[in-house]
Amino acid sequence: SRPMRIRLASTAEMCSEIDADLSRLREAADEAYDKWLAADVALAHLADGKDAAAVGARQRDAARICREGFAALREVGLRIEENRLGDHYPEAVLARAEEVWGEVLNQAIPQAMKGEFREGAAARVDASRRVLTGLAEVRRLFLEWEDFSGVVRLAGRSIRAQEDVLRAIQKEAGAPSESR
View 1 (cartoon, rainbow, N blue to C red):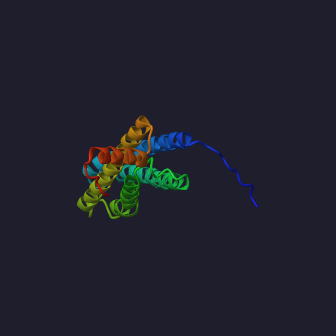
View 2: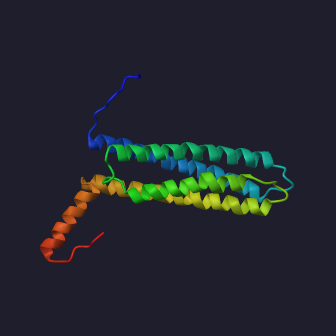
View 3: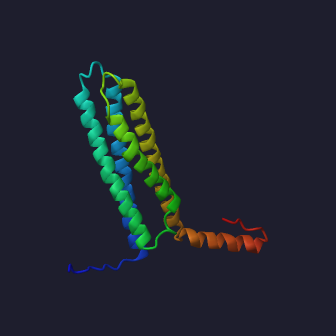
């Protein structure tokens, strides 16, 4: 069997690596958005299918970036789970980013890339706009995720530790604590 390699890393080191991965994922989402936007602009001005090959090439390139980014997003999610770093990264944002990116990749992109240019141009433009909307949402979620992890890093405390401090302060002040 293959030898097993175990690497010991501190929580701070793992978080730093995951933050770098998240930045690369956001850049991939930005690149996919930009490429799809260029294809969408060309698609909207397409006359008689002249530039159909260019539109198709841009869409395929954006789809490739989306596939690679989605696979990397899943890997980051697994690393967060395996290393029990869920209290350093908002799991709901990860789940939503995976959901939206998966919908874009598995539903919106295939729908936007099928059909003839001449006959279904309006339908293709509508489907293309759904891809752009989905990719814009993924970009927004990554920015939210980066902001959140930056707050955790600046505070030097995990989400759960910050919640514990907040509960202690509320208890001391006699204020009712918020329940989840």
